[in-house]
Length: 535
Ligand code: TEU
Ligand code: CA
Image 1 (tube, rainbow, N blue to C red):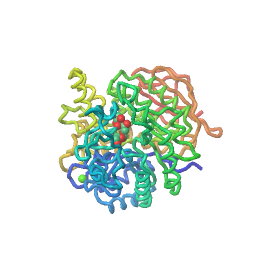
Image 2 (cartoon, rainbow, N blue to C red):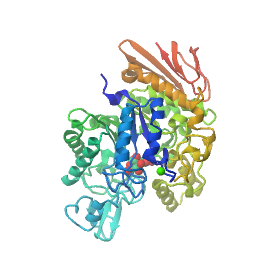
Image 3 (cartoon, rainbow, N blue to C red):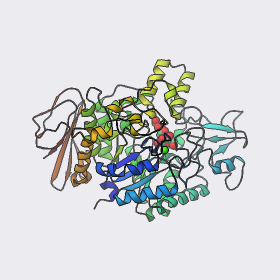
Image 4 (cartoon, rainbow, N blue to C red):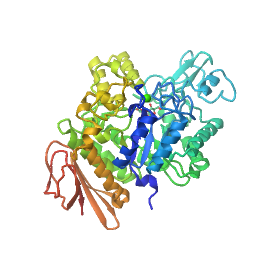
């Protein structure tokens, strides 16, 4: 029997942008509750909720000021308990975001650490400066020095993300104890696991200068270090192994070898990880330098991970990534290309993750100016590239193509004002294409992207071969990928064409599901056609 987390499709909710029940412009728990039936109908069996904890929102909740409560914007702890129970009653389990590399600078631990109060003095990574400069040359994920001066303490603190996200000090056992406590707090309330934010950078082996790199200088001192493996093993042994739960690690800059180490069974660490190699198919250097999308780059990365990691996650979107249909699809074939991408996500081997709106074919946002952009990362990068004298047009193009806010515009529920997301003024603008792309319209259209996702998820839920079958590459050309899934004598082949041209393929068999509703393959795939064939 497959464990339940390999058996079910996961749906990621970005709560701020999902559904606003009280009209304050921010999505909330009551909004999620109102959509549980629709999610059940879609066929997903696990929800991953991006952070809903109290937070000053410098990084939309990834800067946590209290791990054991719910932000009033979203509701109360009682609302969260109700959500867990209501989801359970529909056979949907919930995992939460575990953000433990850093806290918010508004967390009481940090305030006390600034004052040098015990036992919080060494909860964070504090160092003296060097001749009035930061302690080392490290740079952070959002650009610029990874150190910030604190007047009160008279020292610098390390922050690999925004200034308001000081890194915790994992050389301090008290910090690990705090983490165990907060994990139990949520597991005891009935959640089914965690998505673990940047979990492979917890332990910093040394604070020496890093090898100068174009980005993330210093990262060789903290990426997937032995100290991090030890912490993950301890969290597994003392907490996770005592619950019916799973973890998915968000692991940055990992190779298949490292992913296999992070997910090994004995001693246990994580259940599965998110890798990012396939996210570089249209960009490089931590995404900020766009390049032309080539399907083969996407295919090659996906296949490599299929072949080298026994059980991985499969995804094309999350709250940090622009919309997949805008990156890997085609505006001339919006519905076809969204469906072809869906086939990839739901027929490759591994746990499939669908991000809110992906199942509608939601697209990137035509932002007008930086005033429309909310994300701290975008603002930091826009300012930094100005100091580097990059041309304004180029910088703006970077933001349009790569801003995380592309994924964070409100969910498009219907054709009414604000796409039915909120009766008030949404915290971030709604994509004007909600008149064409919205849930209610797609729900009643048998040919819609949403209906296709529903069919595909149902097919997967009912198919052992899609859930647990082996993966074998059959062929890969510039724009067509063909592979096979096999289990105990049953074989399905999948062919995906990510181009505007019809392509010839040597594949026959009864069509189980096709993006174009066809019943038999005749040797050609139409533009952006994908087919699942029984062999
Ligand atoms: O993301 C970590 C991470 O690597 C991203 O910041 C990545 O560099 C960037 O998004 C690429 O555009 C996680 C969360 O998913 C993200 O939302 C948080 O901002 C970040 O950690 C800090 O907690
Ligand atoms: Ca609200």
